[in-house]
Amino acid sequence: EVQLVESGGGLVQPGRSLRLSCAVSGFTFDDYAMHWVRQAPGKGLEWVSGISWNSGSRGYADSVEGRFTISRDNAKNSLYLQMNSLGAEDTAFYYCAKSNGFYYYSYMDVWGKGTTVTVSS
Amino acid sequence: AIQLTQSPSSLSASVGDRVTITCRASQGISSALAWYQQKPGTPPKLLIYDASSLKSGVPSRFSGSGFGTDFTLTISSLQPEDSATYYCQQFNSDRLTFGGGTKVEIK
Image (cartoon, rainbow over all chains, first blue to last red; front, side, top):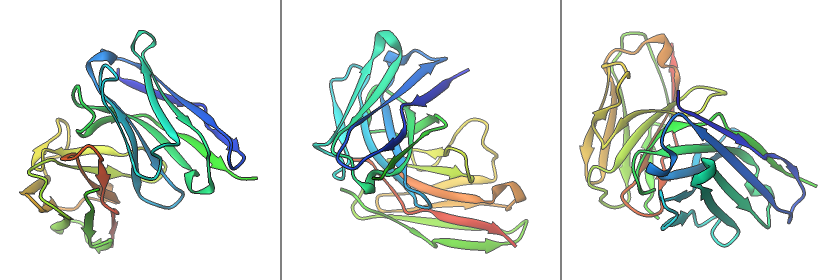
């Protein structure tokens, strides 16, 4: 069974950092690109970042570029999102999602259950 | 970034109705479009990819069409379990984007 399990969310003060993790099982992790997608309370979906199978290409939404860094460890079947300089606008539910191929410019065919990030003083 | 505009933002229809949701891209995206269904408190589920390909296991009452800038998701006969929010997503550029969503309610 394919599983994506996010962790690392929580309450953080504005300006601080947080690192999300996504543990993957049930498929050959290094055959697929991966994504982070977020959803602010009561709002729609926003793609945050994507990374190719070998970390050779990465992309970011304009709203997070320069503050967030996506990475992966294929040996550990894990995806990460380092989030710096957090602001209230980053408060959201963060999903890890599997891409359907090697590169991240694709659709997402499997999603994790998500983790909540709340930025507040 | 490519913008996706969905319409309507919400709709209410009866069981058995044919429902159509549209998604318009700010520039041509070929057939690089997917549709997702999201129910409250759960992650999105992929329904359609490459504009018109139905994901395995998704009921055949769901279908997608379109190319370039204009796309549609159709539910041929609305069922109670189809009450959800539907999103389109483009993957034609290296900055992926989602539409704003369409909330479908059952009358």
